[in-house]
Amino acid sequence: MRSRIGVPQVAALILLFIFALQCAWFMAHQPLMARESNYVEAGLLHLERLADAGSSERSPLVPLVAGMAARLSGAEHHYGKLASYRFCIRLPFLLTGLLLGASLWYVARRLYGDMGGYLALALFCFSPVMVSWASQVGPEIIAAWGAFGLIFTAIAVAHTLYAPREVVLWNWRRILLMGLSMAICVGAQFSLWIVLLPALAFMFWVGHVRRGAVLVIFAAACAIGTILLWAVYSLRPVAFGSALINADWLEIASGSFSWAAVAPLLATFFLQNGLGLVLLLAVTLVTFAVWQRPRFFGIAAPLITGAVLVALALQVHFAGFTFLFVALPFLILFMAGVSTDLLQSRYAVIANAVIVGVLIANAIIDVYGLAHLTSRTR
Image 1 (cartoon, rainbow, N blue to C red):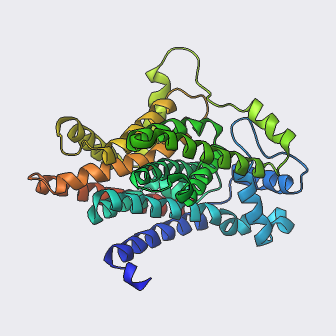
Image 2 (image 1 turned 60 degrees about the vertical axis):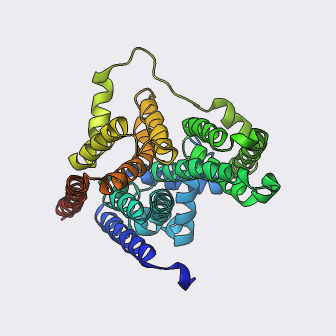
Image 3 (image 1 turned 90 degrees about the vertical axis):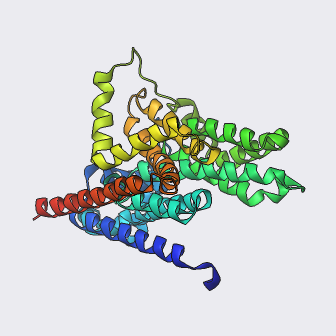
């Protein structure tokens, strides 16, 4: 184990520790909200089989996580003082945020090298949106981790199809992980089943040498994900079947597209992360369009997935913010990939100034937001 821990791993752990400290500060100064209490109550009732915690938008997964945290911490027996247990109730969501950050660092480092891993994780750890939603009970952070894991587990499985061996049986661990990612992603938000489409498309693109194996692996992962979702419904076939029938699988808004309706959503989401991140996204998009070097699969795949999610966020009724949040790790990965190429080009000085400026701006916004939160709770 020691031989695998070097400077990149230590740097990643330090960044994740800083992220955890920010989340702990947020949890200490942000009281438990009514929405979070509702998740806890629904989860406890579901555990007792007194009510179904699912809805037409999502499965009981998030309420179950909150309810289990409340039960294990003892908050179940002190419901009137639920706010006193907010650290324990929110802890599973903080752990999910840390796992998402670690996953993002791992993928970025494998694709773009150490510098790419540092950039991706720094953008993640100093994102005010990531800090706030990893510190609260809700489906957003769980859905983001599930979707990210689904896409890159699918790509990893497809890469193994070039090996001269029995690829389906040899990949059973990755198939299980892919099925788990599907259950987490779709269980957190039914309409996120749409992420299955780019995952399958990437598998066909990467593993075109064995398309039959791609279909078998994808079908097996879907079967595992379905079984895991069924387990969330306590293995009750009637309840599970009713949930699947009544689910809002894609709540597309009716009527014509209107910027007046979607502009506030985009402005609120992206400006919460600061103008620096918006600037870096614009710079990397332009660079990707005009420069051939960053146009390869490892950078295009997260961009395509993020673009699909952002496009759908502008069309759905109620899950627009969730889709934007799920898109953010993919966009961060894309920005890290293009930025790494820029730092290795003749424009390295300018790129370094922009990237360092963005990271400093994000850190300042983070500190200001947490300090402002402290002043509001005095």
